[in-house]
Image 1 (cartoon, rainbow, N blue to C red):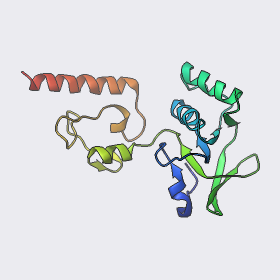
Image 2 (cartoon, helix red, strand yellow; image 1 turned 90 degrees about the horizontal axis):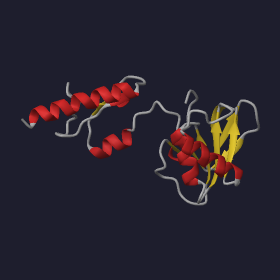
Image 3 (tube, helix red, strand yellow; image 1 turned 30 degrees about the vertical axis):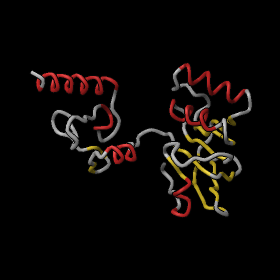
Image 4 (spheres, rainbow, N blue to C red; image 1 turned 120 degrees about the horizontal axis):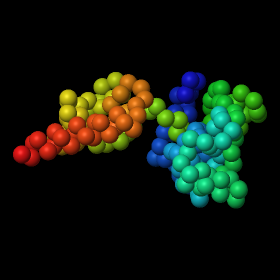
Length: 181
């Protein structure tokens, strides 16, 4: 996010579901497929709010749109749409979220699913070496772990496309086929 995350609450702010417990008041930030999937998953055992700057979840696939609509209709997920977060503060061991157009609210945990982040935790747990937040790979997209490749937008400074991922996959497949001959 554009605003600072105070060090006192960093352990309560996540970019995946790792660290989320049961019975917590959680806000998921984002409106795409990951945000919706996180909110729907968490709402079975937590008090969940989903915050999105737009008025609808138009970027999500039809299955996720139906899932979030059902979760909202049954009261399992509370939507905060057409709003933006301007600041986060620590308040009594919780996260105080300050919005641009409504009263501040306090949550136990925040989960960001806003895109544009490299899955560093996954890369580290896989043993893939990173530099400047990107996985290191050779000209064939092979990482420091022989036989483990990366492809698509994870290899780029910012963004990417499905076509990029497909092209990388094609190149990787040709490289592997050449090795087996």
